[in-house]
Length: 105
Image (cartoon, rainbow, N blue to C red):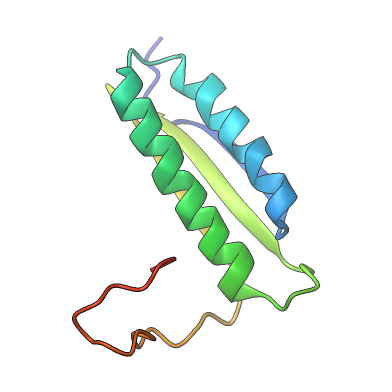
């Protein structure tokens, strides 16, 4: 049986304390594929940043929204999609010096 297109969907409240649940799911699902420790670390970092951006920028501080996560196994790869239905934010840089990158960018 081919594993093309197998996916797991997870919806979490848009609150920082739930991001670790998504990371745990990522770690478990990544165990299905042979990934190096470095690759898994990079995936977790990117995942955490994407979820944090959704929690921080998509909804108000009451965390009334949700973050939708899809983990998809395709052939020899693992794809992860993080989405929300929030309003978003102004993408203009906030740093005073345009050459300086702001943290949480």
